[in-house]
Image 1 (cartoon, rainbow, N blue to C red):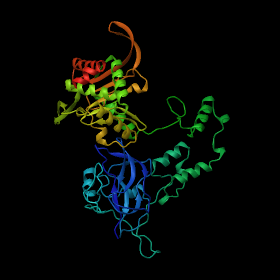
Image 2 (cartoon, helix red, strand yellow):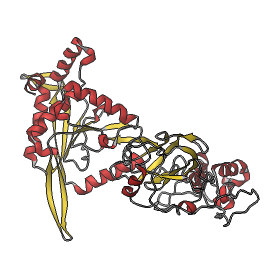
Image 3 (cartoon, helix red, strand yellow):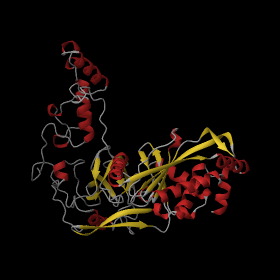
Image 4 (cartoon, rainbow, N blue to C red):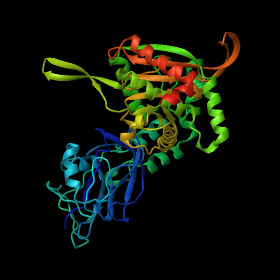
Length: 481
């Protein structure tokens, strides 16, 4: 009898190397079919459902919800007809023996494509036969003899007390002051499970908590109280401040990607900033008039501004480019500016998963109404975590409407590797000289942050002034578009 088919976590797009396992959609023992979703995983780009390229019985789930899995490592093992029975869980040592688990994504994408008819970023097939092609040698396994009393030919891998495979279990133990080395695991080969840690927490007696009166000084007593309130060990102190640590949040997923992107932008791009106050009264009046005639088909303000931005980028195409270095030889690099035939307009969107920038592909071909439709659609899929890597990583220029947070302006960070980002503040009533007289007008601040390697202040100022003039005279601007 042969061993189960091991499905490796596929490349989920754009060179991503890891994904967080959010939720299993199947359990050990379930019967599944080809292309059936088996797990939800979250990458730095989006949340996706991973379909199975195999049909059969779920034998092993390689990971727990909340665990970060590397691309190319085992995700699930599926037993098809005629395969041997295997344990429902495996140890790290056993998992590491899976052949080519650390191979490049290109190697296993070719292997898997015979089995699945469902196309996912990084793998997919025209088939759908429920059985993938195998070209690599398989991991040796110990099969169960027909005689129930027969013993395996080799002893099972033994775990030492205090060893766990789940980051969630380790964190639970740390947050509740449980010493893993003092526990005896009830899982396979002595694996310490969540239930073991929960039992240790429940069994903890009040006497195990130090008495504040026996501590040395007010700082120790304060630290103890803070630790008890936050379910942390009283010894978990920050050495710099002397305060107990209330929370530890792992930087991963979207937050990790945003941090890396922002750091790279500030490190590599010599940015400059220009801004201008704009009288948006006429634009608001135009939109109000349009809404009065057809409320259901009126573009939002952001769609109008996006249309003016696109027109400005056509007039000042330098801002719709990318600066990059190309290595010619070991000791030399070629610097070049890449221009594009078209505009993919990104817009910053705040979601529960963090800040993402979905982009409207070929935005230069769309009207204000069509832009409004795409902004709403992309905002929805971004909030749901269902935007594709292509929708989140293909922009050539970014529009950032931080006015929704009630702020007037911001020196935004360029969305690397783009050349510029335009920020839009809140629209407020301000005294303004209009037609030679002081009046109360609707004023908004526009801020352009640009890569000074791409262009100089004349180009940046010209673009910003073009967008501002279009907003102040929207009827004329829209007539010319």
